[in-house]
Length: 487
Ligand code: GLU
Image (tube, rainbow, N blue to C red):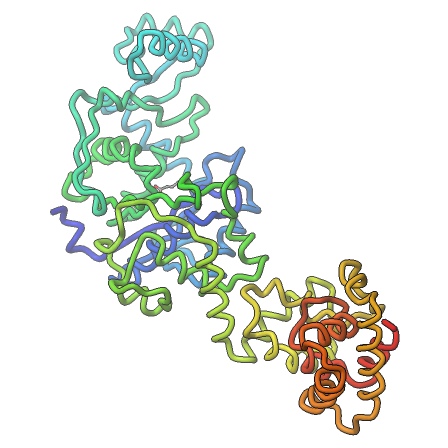
């Protein structure tokens, strides 16, 4: 076993923010974080932003904000610093350039002058001959004359790593022993002809310099591992000191294809905006490919850090199940204290333009929240449910108007208005009592029919919080005015 198992654990989450972080990224971040916390190790957050065309400052900031929002705190990285920084790869370009130069000097790497047209022609020929695609080693052993000729043509070389014959074998903590034959791992580019590093160079150099002991990351990066090990070797790192790798299984959509924009919502920002709580997302993602042992649906962040081990990560792909996430989110919402529920709800109310946040509005929202807490699965549902309490120009939704256009509804509304106006005390119990006696007992109507007309008249929609509580909150004057208005 590598020496790393005995040293203090250092894990890193190293996204390339070319967009909003997605479900797969966050599941990786969560496992990295949980593993660091479980082992009392260090969680490093590194931004891999060498692809300057696709990674933007906005996406970098969004990635930082997302981790913070989820409560995945890091010990080294952006904003907090650390002794192995900087933690943005764009600020470490000279380091990569130095290593590339060293590899050239050592003979581990060489300058490759092939143009993209020439490389394409090689690939074309490989396809035609049905052989594995990849660099054919054309520039491996150029003579000084050949080099001089290329330079005089004005060609600028890339730096290419020499992959020796043979194979690479390593033990993945999730999948066991993995071997890559080098005939399928051709010499690869470390630095472009403008000197900028490629992923394989930067990631490997940083994992070594940041003393990373464990690399937990997505399965899609499995095939880049032999290249990274090759870079460690060129850096003079002994095999016993290589980081250990654990490649996490893919997150699949309901259709068993890899989760993507096409078969599901993948962006964490979408879930945040739709009103999912960070605890719910972490709880759900924690169980996506990992299990605490028993058949549990709920796990707190504390339990996750206590129980998380790589051995309990499944090797088969995990299926993303929106319904499960919704159910967990509903549970987490119901578990909130009224104060916390209010804190989460308020931004949604403001954003929807339902309220501005006056004292009066705040007081009413606090009274109204308990009646909807049991009924919602996302915070995003709140404004529509409470809107009827705050609208200035009350109108009945078009699809609901027709539902109360009949004679019977008219009668319900007329009688309700009469009886309600006699009430001396306006609370949900007295409202319910008077309406039940008038509509159900005297008129003999079914509750669903009688109350649905009232619901529409008072709240403007056939979907609302419980009717009598809604009327209590709205107050006698407004409730009666709306019933009369509907008539
Ligand atoms: N930056 C890489 C990516 O986002 C991941 C690096 C790694 O975990 O090795 O795909």
